Length: 110
Length: 117
Image (cartoon, rainbow over all chains, first blue to last red; front, side, top):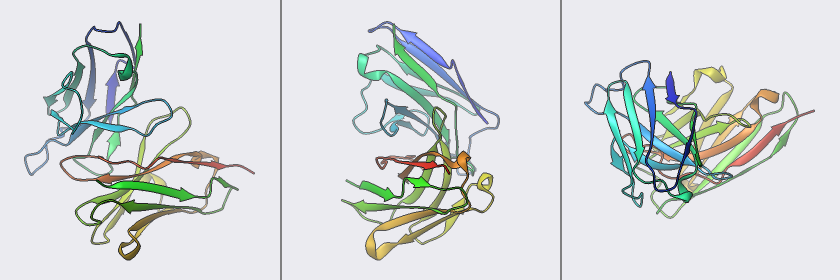
């Protein structure tokens, strides 16, 4: 089970934002990788990949997004929130089947 | 760059079979897992299943064997069938690519499926 907190976040533009994703089991795979990724779903759009394998930014993702963590505890940080960052953020574990998402953190502009 | 375009019936009656197809363009069909997910109204994302480029399919046990994912390499397409649908299967259905290390890089546009009598 993937548990995200908080469920919602209201942030002033230019300020940092941080959200947590906790897994009920370690996401360390037997091959040494930790398959935790983060997605942003903007209203009316499919999710888009932001971070893969805990801390790697996907192509084209601004460097204000960063991921960290290990084992069961993971964090996504936005260093300076911009208006285009609003939406639902999901974490996904793909270490073991079935792959499962957190319930999402909704980020809004204050 | 891989692009995904999905299509299929959007309105079903209870007990019918959902059938969706995702077309792959702009890149190789091999080297990825091809997956289906869904998102019920106002809710989170659920992984339905995947098929490898060699045709090995895996499905979410939560769907109790109602889901079947298949692929047609010659057409660069993969498909989802979900039998005996109920109102609980009402959702936006997405196809996407998956690579073990990178996660779900490319997504289809989504198809809204409503099950109603």
